[in-house]
Image (cartoon, rainbow, N blue to C red):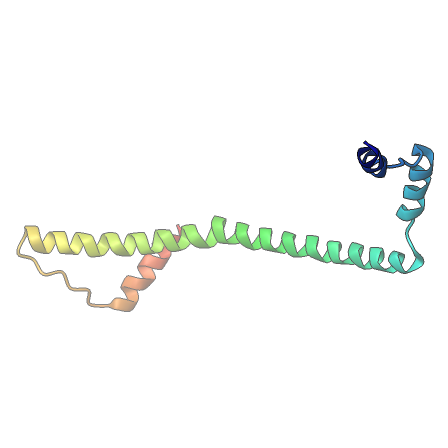
Length: 114
């Protein structure tokens, strides 16, 4: 029996008072003077990061609102002209020949812009 009593007493843990732990937490949470420099650098980094994200958003808007629709319209019309030429060659014995490729491309660009 004495062995079990000695074992049971060794497992008792003294809990520190709640007042001492809260004051210790307050002391641990106070910033050091060296930490204030790191806080300033974190603020500068976050400003730079915010500006970088804004720049990326502007590029994304430019891409999705201007460039992609314009290219889609241009290549869509080019594909439609090609498909129509192939259909006409298949349906009727007509050969479609583009005589002036510069004028054809310029017309495609002007039509895509409209």
